[in-house]
Image (cartoon, rainbow, N blue to C red):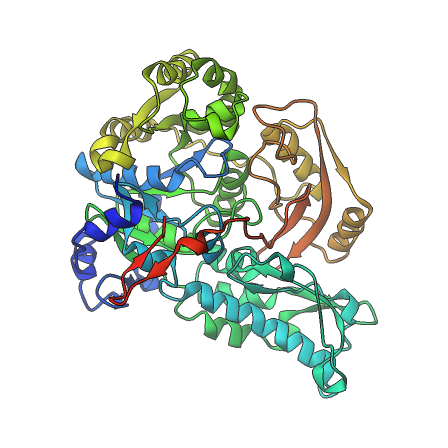
Length: 556
């Protein structure tokens, strides 16, 4: 069996100009990045077309460590929609180097449902992550410079600085550090740390901004810390937003590439859904809707993370509204939630599939809370048995939910025909009654409790002393009427990764709450989740190589 990389390298990639032509874009409109990638200018966004096109959200059940293939299904569904005569574009996030070199691998799809050039997309791509990283770290440098120097000194109390540096790599050793050691010429010593670039507030800002003016305003609103006189300091007080926005001049523009079958794909932004908002940019989604009749987009991990944030933050902020939600389920993940060990997931076990169904049922219930119609896509693996698949189909029938087996990994668009037809039917019949789960004006604690109880199924929420202190700070800063972007494990509906299936009567614990005033939300951090991941014992980086001809191997 060919690897994902071997399949991607075997395809004759079309010049990006021909892909742009499918979107009725002339050569002089797109900004070329070589032969197979291009940037799309923001002027192409058409507000009227955005409101008339069909937005399809792809989410999933709670995953196994390997993930359940939301990106693969999103790309495959896009291929299927084009095969049945619909003008469709897939709009997804950019991969982060952390997972690429870590445990999960790349994020360009898999098998016959991929975006290409796969190697470039999974590595440096068009430099967006680098620009985000540089803008983030410029602010960090300006903060420490202001503390160090007497001229224009704002009187920032180093003990209150909350701004972290970032890098696009899994490196647990950088979670907590001390900067400024070495004497007077090296800065003022203080505690600091690194987050991964995907969790940067700059990433969140880029993904939620509507235009350059909005981008600069949000950058200026970044909360830095307090002065010794307890005055709040923001990035605008350091005159940082102009230079930061200049670094993001090209990064704010979405990237156009193609699928294996030569259909348009827009890739932009890359926040993780367990530690950030987990969706591609508002600009990219609106770009896709401006240029196509259908847009397939995905939100990271399960409905309790990416989909909730997509709907309660991204859609509520931008006015976007999906017509329906595709919930990706795999037989292996259902067996995992049914109590089967990871090492035994390849063995047929219909009973375990049945035992794992409550997890799927909860994700279906979650999407219905937003007045959206869900459809279940069974992401087919070669070792799935017919008996196991029938268990899922029968339960979906009992619940009155459409279901389709998607063999996109092995068949590409041909394996998504059934799913595509059902998606179109649901979209045509959609009532457009989408509504967010909560009102932003509710107190922070009420918003957290509503998500915890209605989406996770928790009984209660507890707060540590640090979290309670953070709540008081949020109130002092006048940030109580913003949405909450909860960071928690993706492996469970709870904040405990060991509670699989559909746990009940559990309590989630808010450890701390980070402020993202520029992005326009706060980040309650639950359980033991970290915003700087670490590498596994055997990282994927050990298997990646390049030969004398420049051909890369080992990516997956």
